[in-house]
Structure formats: C-alpha cells, structure tokens
Length: 357
View 1 (tube, rainbow, N blue to C red):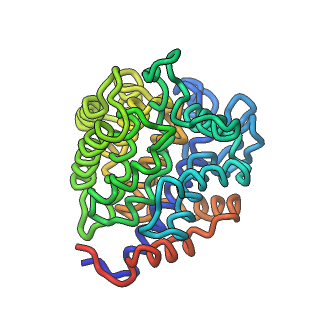
View 2 (cartoon, rainbow, N blue to C red):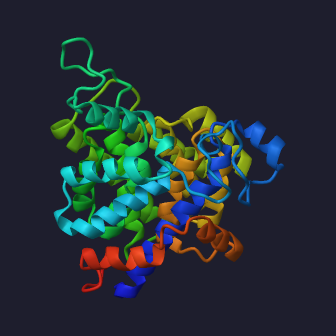
C-alpha cells in the first residue's frame, strides 16, 4: 500500500519529469535526427539548449530550459483539477483552456486542434462544428486527430491511481470538443491510464504498458459513444508496433530511427503517442533516458518527451535526472511550484486520506 506522502511524491515526479522533457525537447522540435546530431553531437541530447528561431519555441520567444504549450497546458489542467476536484466537468476544461489562451505566455505554441477550438469560441461559432464538410455533419478525418489531449492529460491519471475507468471518464472531458476523433481519445486515455498505473504501489514497466493498452481500449469505446470513429490508422495497432520495436532493437539510435520510420513522430496522435509509449518501454521507465531519447528523435520531440516523461517520473521518480538539470528547470519556470501543486492536487482528490494498492 502507498502512504499518502508517497503518492504526493509520485505526482510531483510525474509533473517534474514531464516538464523537463518538454523543455529538453523544445529546441529539437521539427528537426530531423541527422540535424540534431549535426548540431548537438552524436550522443543523446543531455543538456538544455536555447531554442533557435526555426523551432516553435524559438519563434515564440522561448528561452533555455523553459516549457512550451505541452507542459503549460498540463500544469493549467492540474490547477483546474485542484480547484474543482472530482466535480471537474467539460465546461471546467473549456474555461481552463480559455484561461490558458488568455494568460499563458506559451499560448502562441498551441497546436492546430486547440487553435481551431479557441478560434471558434472567440468568434462565437459552435465549437463542435469546426472541420465540418459543407452542410453535412461529417468532419474531415484529420480534424481533432492530433496529440493535444494526450500531451496534457497526465494529471488526471495522477488523481486516480489505479482507477482506469475513472481516469478515462475524466480524460474524455478534456478531449471534447477539440480532440473528438477516436484516435485522439484513445491516445489520451492511454497516456492518462499509463500514468494512473504508474501511481500504484509496486507498479512495474509491464504494468504501465498494460494500463496504456487498457486505456486505449476504453478510449475507443468512449469515442464510439460520445465522439466519432474516423477512418485512418488504428491507435492500438500503432502502439503494438512501437512496443514490438522497443523490444527488439539493440541500441538507442536504432530504436529512434525505427520508431520514426515505422510508427512516426509527428503531431498526429496515431504517431507521437505510440512513439512515446515505445520510448517508455525501451527505456524501461528510466526517466532520464526517456527524456533524452525523446528529445533526440525530433519532429514533435517536446510532446513525446512530456508524455513519456510523465509516466516515467510517476513510476520511478526523478532521482536519475541530474540535479543540475532539475535546478535549471526550476529556475527557468518559476511560475509553477510543482511540489506545492502535487500536495494540493492530492488533497483535492482525497489522496492524502487513503492509501492506494
């Protein structure tokens, strides 16, 4: 059984490593692996570097070791969960997202699905209707199919240690209406449930992976009832492909090259989220190896590092991360006291009152 303070530590670790991964991957976003190696050396990226103007972080004024939209939305979500507790609703999530858009310096980084929702809300249009073809009720298959919901949802799993059903029900609330494609909902539920699984006492890497699988399955069922099943690649199949690669490769660069070539590492939920789960599996949950691998894969590297880092941090803690990296991260992101956030998040969901098997 977990003692309450151990659960708080797991929440803190998950939030911290997710943020470190986001900041480490920000300077390599959209880069190819060959560009990353040419610029930063042949080893995995193992230090914070300043984002260049040809990255989203650099173009939006991001500084060295700062988080991007990924972790900032995750932390805003955590704050809203603290405020609302188990009563958290879809309306609360939309309020949270609007607040993030209006107050976060990282709002300029937002992805295409989130941007479409914010634009509809701002213009007074029905936010459920963006991406509709003509006068029909059919959305284009690429609408709402990105990883925005998956990149931010880990705090929901932290609030529901081992309770995958409750994790998925609440995760769905943060998917709608911006990420209403089944693949995006499956992806978000996989990451949230992986984090939930990592929160349980004695959890192993295999337990977390199985929780990801269960989350994806539950997410697809929820999408069939509450959203839509779209044409295109199946999330579960891509995830199994990533896990197969993770279990058969011989070295770090080989796993990254095969994940990029065969699974993908773009903003699409069918690519970057299975890729993140594959990196988690290959690294055997090691938080520092996870974020270095993810930062070195390029393309949507910061999102991949944040998602996999949340699971690794919750499972194994931040001790493997160099202390100087942690200090740099905290200095660069003073608006977020993650230790206090973990304490209040646990209290909001009564995790301080109970132990979790």
